[in-house]
Length: 336
Image (cartoon, rainbow, N blue to C red; front, side, top):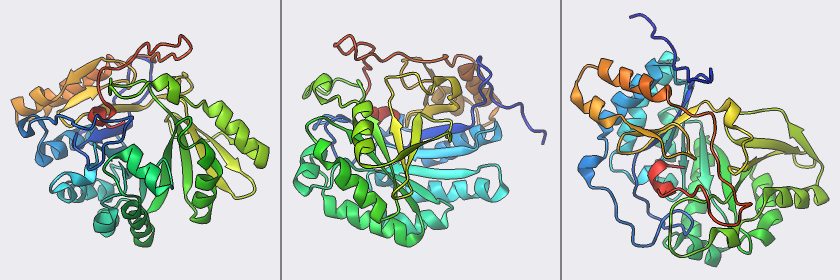
């Protein structure tokens, strides 16, 4: 079978990274991501596990090398391990270089060994605080000990863990060094994420929560020697190394354009919508072409047509002090 032409967008960027939300459901209700009484999508709208396999396999055939599984919480989807196991064949063939996931950690005690067996080697765990009460407050339904057990299980299984923490003013500011020291003690990298103006959650004003990562970084620099790293994952993070601990710390500032020019990714929602840019509403429906024909030609054509619409960049701007460019969809729907 001939190798198809790779996916190249209008700005000559090769699309090699696909993020796939496998469910909009979650066992937490984090305040910056979901409202407490979320209405979830009807099951028939979601891609089945077989359809997810077909979709991802088609993207891999077209040159996607890295697949990140997200949600909601991916591990609450019933039968999800069969999907991870079905992706193993692409790792074995060398067509896929990395299969990874972003999780809240709540289910890792159950699934860490199976994930490792399926070929997953790294996981990103979202964790904003090490204070049990604050954790319960911000996740509403989450319990910190369950997540810490999950992290133990992941490391024991041989998975490399990276912690993703959302920087929230007045919430986890005073934990900056606590979280950083804890990650260092467990040999885990840490990425700080600036809060994003997404979705109307009806219960908080994003502008009050905005904690600039410039400020966070300056505080780290008062205590440690920071070396900028040139390394880019084709993603939004800028990295520094803390010389005293050897740790790698990432900073994701979605409000700046520091990563658009090298953006190599697209996002697929659990209903088969492909978002070419997290900060734009443009999307393409891939579920219809997928379901239209068992032959993947129609799907491949739809994917190519979508990539041809990928914009150069996006615009979030807090400086105008109102949530402009605010997205109407929840993060849980796009999968981060």
